[in-house]
Image: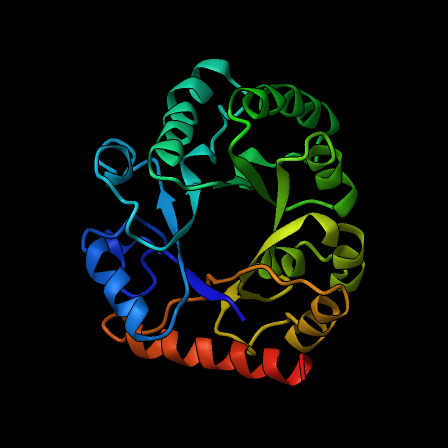
Length: 257
C-alpha cells in the first residue's frame, strides 16, 4: 500500500484553518518519512499562493506526489484571466520540480455538475492539456461518475482523484462509482464523512471503508492513497496521523490478503 497524506496534517493548523500550507513544511517531510508515509500531496491555497515555496525553491528532493491546486476553488474558475494567474504558474512549478501530477478540486464554487459549466470548463482545461502534455491532471469532484467521466475521457492525461468522503456526502454509491471510473482513478483521498457532509475521524462516519477497499482490490487499483482525514486535538497531529494510518493499513491488508 502506497500511503501518504495531504500537506499540513502532521503539523498544527495554520491560523485555525483545517487545510492550509504549513509554515514548517520542511519539518513535515522529515516527520512523514519517520512515520513510514510514502508521499505528501503539496497544497497551494489562495492564502499561501503569493509566498508558496513551490514557485521559487528547488523542491525536487522532496517526495511530492502531486500539487493540489486548492486555490482554484473559486467563483471565477471559468474565467480566462483567473486561470492564467492561478493555474499557469502551478503548471510551470510542476515542470520545474519534476512533478508530473496536478490535482484540480472541482468542489464547492468550482462544482461541475451543471452541464453548461462543465462544457465551458472542458473547453478551457483541454487547452491546458495541450499546452502541458507532460502533466497529468487529476480531478477531485463532488459529482456523479458520468459527469466526471465526461471530463476525463477527453484526454489521456486526465485522471480522477477519488475522494471517499466526497462520494459519501454526495449520497453516491461507492461500488457503482468505482466500477464506472476505476480505469481513470490515479489517487484515492481517504476521508470519512457523514451523509450530512461532516468530516469525522475514520470509522466514525458513514463511509464504508471495508466495501471501498474490497472493490478497489477487485479492480486491481495499485495507485497511491492519500490521507485527508479530520484533524484531532491540536498538538497531537503525529499521534492522530499514526492512528489513522494504522486503521487504513489494517483494512487494506484485510481486503488484499
